[in-house]
Amino acid sequence: MAYESLATDRFADLKPGALLDELDASIKALVGVDSTGGYGGIPTLDNAPQPLDIDDIGEYSPGIDEIENLAVAETLASDRAMAYKGRGEDQPRTYHTVVEYGDRYLNSTGQHSLHALARVALATVTLAAQSEGAELDIHAAREGQRPLEIHDEIVKGVWTLKQYDDYTRSADEPHTPENSGEALAAGLNGVLASEDLEENSDVCVVISDFLGGAQYSPSGALRGFNWQSPLRQLHNALGDRLLIARLTTQAQRELPFARTLTHEGKATRLDVGDYLRINDRYRQMAAQKAQSTQAILRGMRLLELDAGDKSPLVTVPKFVFARQEAAI
Image (tube, rainbow, N blue to C red; front, side, top):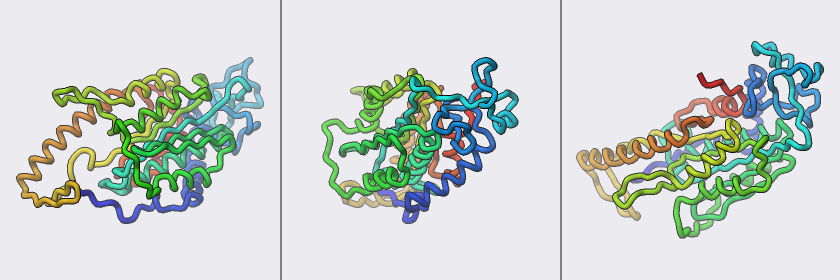
């Protein structure tokens, strides 16, 4: 089915510096309200007494935390006394980021393309690492192409985002891999195998629509995905320090109405009955994938980042920076 790409997409078209500036303003407005959570409630450096040593903000512990490390603003916003937690040499912090890019991200129904939302999420992670004085590891995965690997000991947000933009806009013909649907799984396995992964302190952010890598039985039944095992391993290792941004759009759930089907460059005219039959099968397969994906992601720290979101500059920073609510 031929989809129409979004002709204009503000968050995809913004220059890296402009996008980061807008995000930074939104983050500062948000974090001032509440940044009191455990890992994932990420503090900025603006008001930290020792910015280079900041690790997190948590509940004040008499006899362990120094009185001068009391976080006044966070204490007033919470029902508990909160303190800045220092990071020692034995507690490094790196932000590992796996962002899957697909040409399908340009085709969506809503306010934005999924590519634009992935770009906003990646830019937010660079600011999170920068705000904490942490290192940043990025693995950008694109089906049929070599991944883009970036490691910043000192985060250079504009440069980093430009490298990602160049990668996603590359006009090179993709090389057909022996096994399709491996990009996301390969990125997750790369984080697990990394010698730089510190399970007691590091953060991992995964950005994807989670549609690739489906595995089927001989009868055609969906058995699962090749990325689910490494993702669960990361969740077991990191807990709430694993953040999942799942890119969604109405086009994943049902076909936009169309009277023409395009396959291998050939257009076939459809009548209404043809469209309804094709759409019914599409919706059944989409629902099966969605149910399986929801079951896999259940219990993980998850943001459903939809193409219809009208304010991603608020939604994404709130997910990354705001306090993680305790499960009831």
